[in-house]
Length: 255
Length: 257
Image (tube, rainbow over all chains, first blue to last red):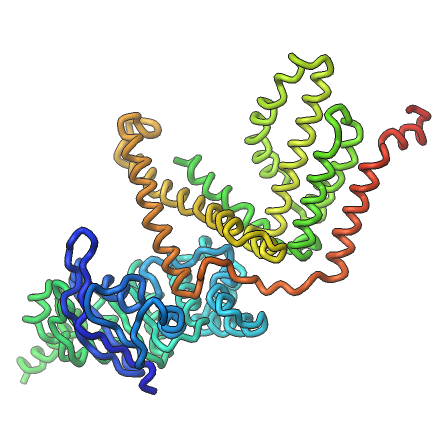
């Protein structure tokens, strides 16, 4: 299943105002991996996602999905495989009902009405909002909107699910529900987040971006325990790791 | 502030109405669009002094409103927004035409029925399904796209306006509205914000395969009930166009011609 592999080779991108957001980034994400991309504000995470999805094209380097290089010609084909859940669900929900929003993608790929209905029902069932099928998106709560936004991309049957700050604005219960949904998605996942506990919970590999470059890449537990690295990149050790280390010290003291 | 918030709710009203379930809502959008278009054509085909002949045409929007269970007050409120414009267009007629009041009344009736028919069409069909119907009728893609995206842009504009107004009013509690001094930058910022937001929405659409044409909503072809609806009403319009039913009725009931 190497066709789900994403390879980023020497990627660089400068905005028209000359600001270099990405400088020579390279990494590979294998099929089925859950990868967290973390970094401080302005480190280049969102720009990297835009480049992965072909919303913008790099000034240098390339993105390969499977063996196919991302270009304007291959964009439509690649976008069927990679899907993004936006940070702000309101950007993703633009039609008049949840059903129409979830059906928007499958309809664009000219699937039959029966197939569209099936996909919509499956996606809504998966995220637990089947009862909101005919509701107007603007009437949903923040958590429901996020679930609907995820359903819009699940209905596309993507090979790779990309999420930009998925837990922003969610209450603890909705956050937990989102983590459960993410755990059920068994294809490749790429998650950018400041919520390092979420990354710890859902990702096997973590890439730390700092000032447009890869500062570290490795197993999540290892990367997120590296206090020095995280502080250098203006990040903090996640609360759960801090707690674990405190408990460990407590036991050590007791011994 | 409250006015803007209620405007935001109001603007969504037609999307909410279009989601209702009724015999009219379940009709094929193409049938409703063609019938409404025929209604408008027949309506404007009357001469400017033929007021009485226009009266049977009230039946069509009235039938649609009753059968679709559309609320009268919001429809009336929207009509009131347009009425001053209609009055402005027709009010000079009595000054230049001896039978000016007749032409004024004719303009008022025709314009009012046109607006009500358009509101009823959107309220029973929804813009997305209307767009789909326009595609089926081979209206150029560019036109349909402009129509639907402009409609959607209004929501983005109002939503961003609400956010900015809220932030502004919280820090300017001694004044009402936006001061003249802040008006220019406020509007400029609003347009930039809506542009930014509209671009993100466009990205979201592009990522789900949108390539400049709204997808077909999966509506099947016209059914017998759609044909009965369209042909029945077009037949009625034809009868009303070529026979003066109010005069015939007057003759029949009271011997008045």
